[in-house]
Amino acid sequence: MIAATQLKVGMVIMHNGKPHRVTNVLHVTPGNWRGMVQTRLVNIETGSNAEHRFRSEDKVEKANMEQHSLQFSYRAGAAFHFMNTESFEMIDLPADVLGDAVNYMVEGMMITADYFDGRVVGIEMPMFVELNVTETTPNIKGAAVQNTSKPAILETGYEIKVPPYIEVGNRVKIDTRTGEFVERA
Image (cartoon, rainbow, N blue to C red):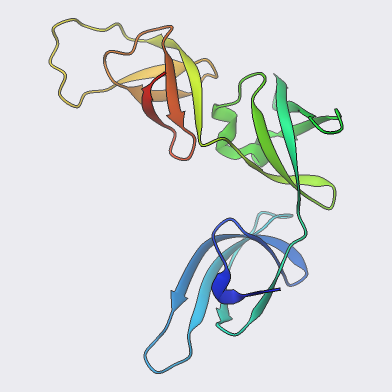
């Protein structure tokens, strides 16, 4: 059990007997009233959103989560296939569990999976990934370079904006939190 004031975005807690991921936390201290913690919770099992206000003195139960390292093997249709690096068990995950991570999945990539009651309920990606540019417009020599960008398609099929000097075949570093170009790798 933890105090409601210690809740952080990304934590998984038990609320009304069900596991919920905390997606927003706001500490409110209105004038001469008691402080409270306003949260947005997403039910892990159903995906439904709810807002809940905890009193500052409330105690919250953290969900019992397991974490395992998974290595991405291949994609077949809408399913992504992973190998558990501890048990060597093959696991397939649908795109809705992976979320935006599908844009960065390349063979051999390692992720951390959160398990609740024996099934994957969320994943943690590396903060940065390096991917190859497979398609982009050619660089025009002598063109003015004033905060311009051009579209580029990566090896995963994901499209991002890159500086004009990036060419087909370059490796680029991408921030997986924002989906934006960081630097040439």
